[in-house]
Length: 87
Image (cartoon, rainbow, N blue to C red; front, side):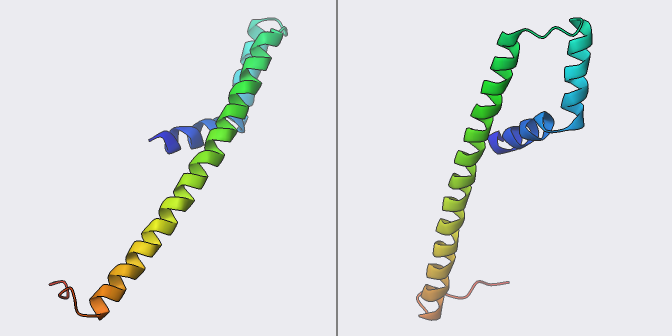
């Protein structure tokens, strides 16, 4: 769930939709965007990028663990320690 949220948020901030929202906010505030707001948005984008990198690392690690587990199970089946699954 967190991965999907991060991916959707990242997509939003890099999409034309976010540009339209930003333009709407600018019009509402007569072209004046508070520097604090810009800074908070930039900090949020940086944190989201960091979180995305972290999540990608976790997914890669889980993928490696899954591959290892599959190889071990295949090896055990070939040694006839486990019966073949029934269809």
